[in-house]
Length: 60
Image 1 (spheres, rainbow, N blue to C red):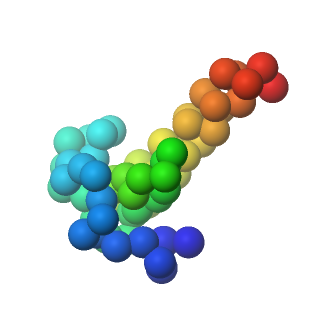
Image 2: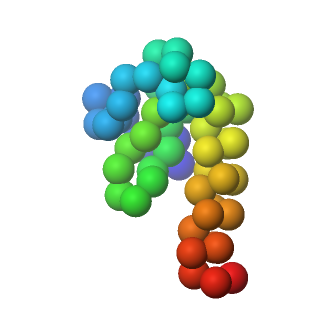
């Protein structure tokens, strides 16, 4: 999935976890927007947390 994402489309310039600049290899889609992270570890941590939050909001 990250192969099709472009850093130019990213809604943020700094990682929400670390505050470091985002990296092109650490992008994801969240609620239809490209969100960037400083490394794949931060991206993966976000994806897991977001999935758990979304599931809790849906009562799953």
